[in-house]
Image 1: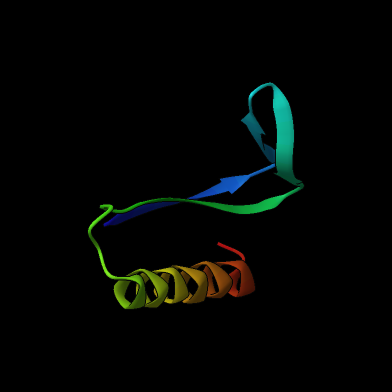
Image 2 (image 1 turned 120 degrees about the vertical axis):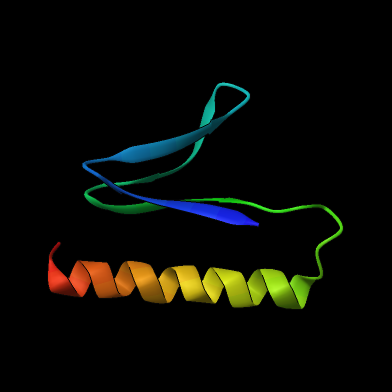
Length: 61
C-alpha cells in the first residue's frame, strides 16, 4: 500500500465525465492498495494518513 499526500488549492474527482467529489484548499490523499489486502490493514493505513495530514495542517507547513 502507498499514499501520496499533496497540498492543493482545489481538487476534484471525475468519473464518466461527472464530478463525484471536490474540495477547496487543503490536503489531497491519493491511496493505492492491493485488492487482496485485508480491510483492517486498509483502515489502519487510512487512519495513519489522516493523522499525518491533520498534523501537517495544524503546523501550517
